[in-house]
Amino acid sequence: MRFLSSHRFRVYLCLALLLAVAFSCMDEQKFPTPAGSRLSFSVDTLSFDTVFSGIGTPTRSFMVYNSGSDGVSITGVAFDGGGSQGFRVNVDGVYINGNLAQSIDCRAKDSLRVFVELTPQAFDADEPIETTAHLWFALANGERQEVVLTAHCQSVIVLRALHVSADTTFSVQRPYLVYDSLTVDEGVMFTVSEGVRFYFHHDAFLRVDGSLVAQGSLQRPIVFRGDRTDLMFASQPYDRVPGQWQGIRFSSSSYDNHMNYCDVHSGTFGLRLDSSSVEREKLRLENSVVHNMSGDCITAFSSRLFVGNSQISNAGGNCITLYGGDTEFIHCTVAGFCPFYVMRGAALIYSNEYHNQPYPIHRLSVRNCIVTGYSEDEIFGNQSADFPQAAFNYYYQNSLLCTTPVSDDPLIVGCLWDNAKDLCREKNFPAFNLDELIYSFSLVSTSRAIGGADAQLSSIYYPFDRQGHPRLSDGMADMGCYEYVESTNDR
Image (cartoon, rainbow, N blue to C red; front, side):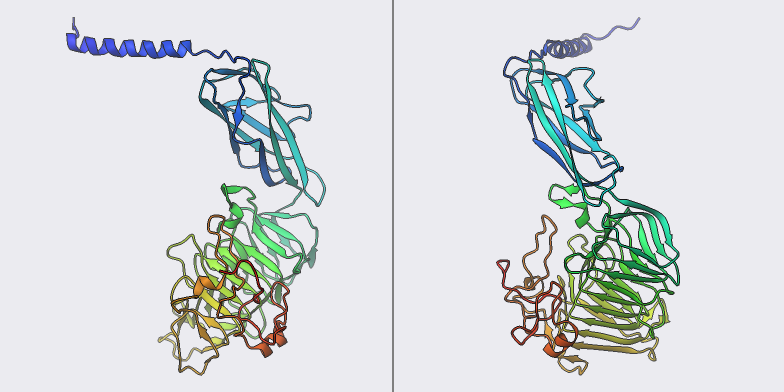
């Protein structure tokens, strides 16, 4: 027989006594819920942002606190007579199915977490409908307290791997929710009316083998975005975080695309143009925004591309990458101020070579534009030494350029250099709200872009800026897509 030493015996005895005391204290914890005891809540109303009918939401939560010196017993948690309206509730691990089947105790100075999800009932309406449920907490002392659950529910049209195989117009004003992909077949024209909104699920994309004609308006732009409407952090919606969906790809067979007053944001690659004949226009992008991509905002391979009066901004890759082609930019703001990636790219990169193949730059014209970003040099042109016969034609006119100053190049005319010690780069614009990821690329009064554009070119192409402000009221025009308007946002 083996006996414990007296020392080890004393250690085990102490441990046993401590455990007994602990369990005794737990046993003695009472939940008397005296008169006047009440709970407090981290929210009076738990609000979901816009949610889609028939589709479950991510989980939200709130806290229940017992700040009193006595434990309380919650004898009932239930929805009022209006019912749950599709809300699902879990209180400290207990699922609430209509009414609480067992009491939940909350110790003195302790708390409980309540988890809430919602699957709104399907309905048929273009406008959102507010859904509200009242969740009641009943205590053993007769107290009843309420938390309101509310959401704006939006009916959507769900598209799953849809092929547009005949000329089609989308004009319904409720959102289109795209899973997998939306493909426009070769030879087909896909017309999108003003105000239409596309919500793409994660990794979904739009592929255009035919032609896309998306004609929005200033008041009712056409929106291409991800489908997450909830918050990543308290002040940051997922909609302001890149990589929520893929992007729009124009394949080699796609021509005669026109996007006007479109908003393409928070995807992976923005707009991607595959190689095609430069004798025929592939894409005309006007009065639009392509913003906040994890990769490039625009990538064009050997394509004829026109971009006017548009904002191309904030990319983890490059704002614009061009391999060969025939491209024009007039009155554009190209701004590389992405906060998410230390190794972000540049505002504008172009090359006449790709993967050891020549990609002639027949024309790159940048006029009345702003091309800037956080770095001291945001413009890089690569003229391949391996293909000396490949065209490398560029022209910059009356633009504010964040790059090394050039004084003796006849192909750079009337430009200013956005790399002075003061009042350059991000200081051209109102202070960015990095906490909420809100960016404005309108001009402040000290920007050197004011009055620097070629007014005659403005009168021909864009006498009004992207927001509808007249450019030539003072006889001068500003560089970029936004005309300066006096504002309290000036630095």
